[in-house]
Image (cartoon, rainbow, N blue to C red; front, top):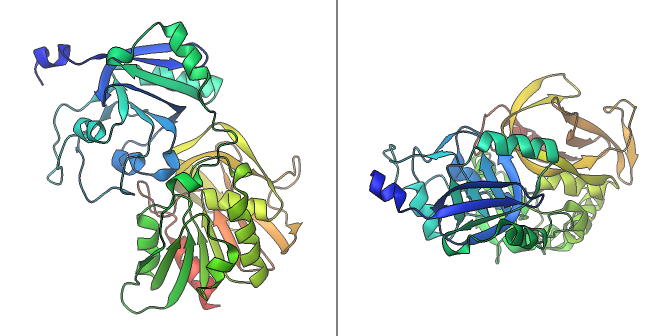
Length: 381
């Protein structure tokens, strides 16, 4: 990119709902966008992040300074489209240097209409969000740039993440099947709350024929497949508003079918067990979160993307102590070592468990991929 080309890039302005602003250049599409400002600490895997449906209606700030080095390819997306509402980077790569690259990240974002901004002091922005918490934000570029005070009013009028029921906006329109790799050992009914491509692929590698159903599916719809197990996927939004999947989960628990949930699925299982949920100050998003198994003491470094968490409701008590639910005893199986947030649930008198993090690790470390083995053993039992 020449100096002349860089000067031709439209100016852009990022406006937070508390009035703080950051100036930069347009990156991706030119125009305006709104969402919840969150930051991701991953140094790799930006394409998986962009295409993760859990980021629906969020403006993602990348803390890694150099983004776009490997361009965009056709192998790594976790869904059929980019889901982030906006994208914030410091120093976008001028060229793509991967043999798999098909186009630049800038071109990919522009083609999908994703408004972004570059040249931003992302360290200062991230520190602001850590101190003040995740908040609404707008990105404006080209002709959309106007008086910051007017733009702040528009940001403040945009919908918040609290109370947002978004799973139905990202779920599949029609059921589909991911066949087992090799011999079929199990049939799994997966409730798509914003499922990533990698997750059925991992289950398929364990001999699972995965039937992916829309978020509107009922418990009876899931059980009609006579599944060996039921899976609750990741997804966006406030779990306190997602009543249909909670009712479906309760029906599955009543039927005694093995159940496994991740991320949003962990929160849905928590609600089915009569636990509450709450919004984190700025959430966990990245590939470096230390999580401890309360039973073994083992620590995994894990991939995260969540702004809400399960409320165990037992302040001052042993977080790993068993507690009663409508389906027997349960326990908190995992906790985050950074802030003590509940990172997993396990029923002791029934066959169900969940984790808040992403064992499919797309992107991220592979410490927790053994959870798919655990699900297979649960179905074998």
